[in-house]
Length: 332
Ligand SMILES: [Zn+2]
Image (cartoon, rainbow, N blue to C red; front, side, top):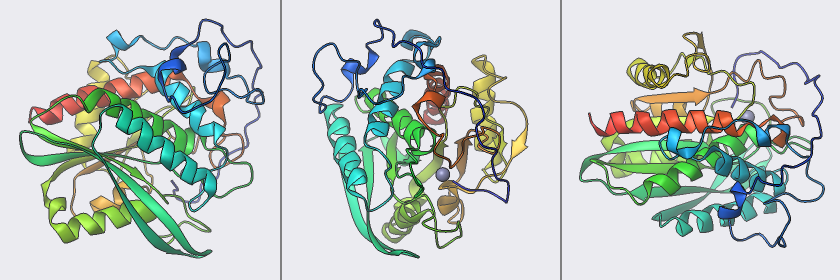
């Protein structure tokens, strides 16, 4: 994502290399396509940095509406293992295969939409992945994330790209077996990041594509709410209210966070971000961007956005607020 002219400070703190906790086995449920041998930590190559937050106090799934923060963390680790994942790269194609096989393993109905995007660095193949969980009545609740990472040297996007994609995978695992009043669609967007300089034409390729196609088909009118997640895994994250988002949805999400006991993570403050929700806001769809304040995290769009910045606890809390906010939207 991008916003105004603020540029982040370089991370100056040192990632501590702690021993990997032997008891941490959450990732063993996830994936299934990795070829690690028994005894190796899940998804962690020998070269991978050992994340200090892996042992933090993520609340257990029975306290977070079933959302498993440690499992989501393992899914971030899995993505980081693919390396830098800009649009059109073989690494991103490998992630696309992983996302599809993972979603299918949850029993999710999965559709893909391949398209070609005209970018400042040439025409690039891109692919949106869309889960469509049917509902009982007309109407769609759309969730979304981008899964590409910014075209930067050594940029693995653990938080920017990885965290929200892991969050949506974990939500898909919970939601695909359920049937609510309204359909729930979960979009995994390609090409959110600018190839050169963020602008209306060089950014949000995937979400612009989906919004345009849904406008053509008429389905866009059925979308009751679009909940976007981006940069949601930082151990020091805070989530001010994103000011271009639809106020009623912001209130619903932040009031839910308050009620669940997370007011310090979701403060009553405002900041603004340009992101995939804009592609739907511009077409009249109510939308909210749940995004950590990247201007203050110290690693945004730098090679320091690595697995060591990710917290299973933050993922669990944000996941919990998503689960409970969705229940509210399903009851309206
Ligand atoms: Zn970004």
